[in-house]
Image (cartoon, rainbow, N blue to C red; front, side):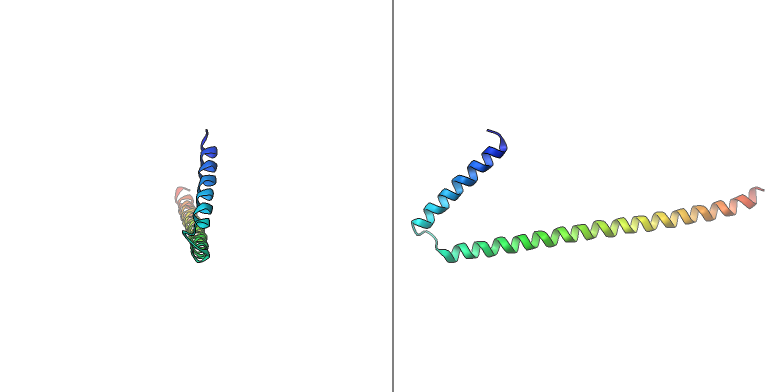
Length: 87
């Protein structure tokens, strides 16, 4: 079995076990609702973290571009000063 088949098998077994536990009364709908809320909160946090990471990358890229532009300006100024001195 490859990894995908193994994961699918584990998920199916877990769902069957959860259904059996629910049928036997080991947990009720409140527990399921709380789990759903926890999953939604976790998904929101992951989304926020992804947005923060994307913003950080954007800011770093913009900062690097600004520094490169400043360095190019400095190099151009140095070249302009060097040309008359060489003549």
